Length: 129
Length: 129
DNA sequence: AAATTAGTTAGCCGAAGGGCTAATAATTAT
DNA sequence: ATAATTATTAGCCCTTCGGCTAACTAATTT
Image 1 (cartoon, chains in turn red, brown, orange, blue):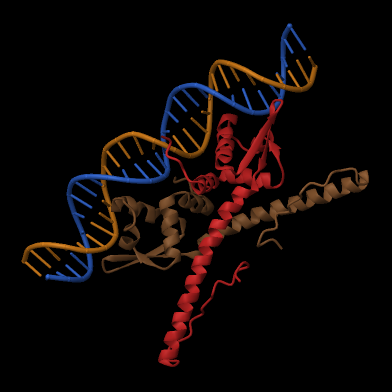
Image 2 (cartoon, chains in turn green, purple, brown, blue):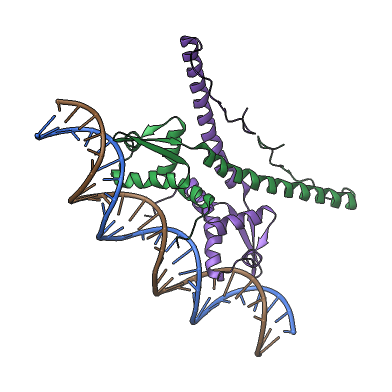
């Protein structure tokens, strides 16, 4: 019956924990064994393993065991999936701002320049077209 | 003693819940009252209010009450903060890929073209410079 | 003034989260 | 063969999460 979580649920809740974010950051720099990953943390191994497991379940991390050592690597696609969510939201947000701006313009025209000009910072961000 | 969560912790765990993501998405299209926001959800109001509260605590949403109605709006800066985290990770990841590619090139040169050419998809994404 | 609407507070409940220890495998080193 | 290393399983514990109901406050409507 396991109430299936959406992929985004899993990814975001995986990233909600600082230990796990640190692991992801570490893995961005290249693959590593469980032991290597665990080293910087003052935490019992089994606790740490749970984090690894959460990351794997979310699809953010993949791992494979050879001999007695398990090597973990980042699966960038999952990260990208979450990043896309933000871009999607930003797109909606910016479209709305544009509409709002157009609306203000219309008002302005109708009132023929009686309104004061506010800062109007139209979110000039890197990605912004 | 409240174990202070980092801002990112709060934002990601806020976004880990589908109800809250839906609220954020809705608010990207413009502000709304608590009642309007709650309408699409089959959930008792107090439960819903908890979600609003989580979103406010995380900084993703702001609200103000006038008369008996509370109006909520998105605070885009918080969203952007989380988005930046991904871009940061991607930057590290891509830098690493570049280094790796350079390393492979070097090997190739040393071996004088004995290695097979693999696909080598250098993550050609929108933002990628 | 009475009734409705819109939120809010308090408190209960079961499930999930994040930590621990102890015990067990399974590989590799001596 | 023994010992050391590396990971894994099982299970306990307490806190947080996400839902609920019931009761209450404050603003509008009628």
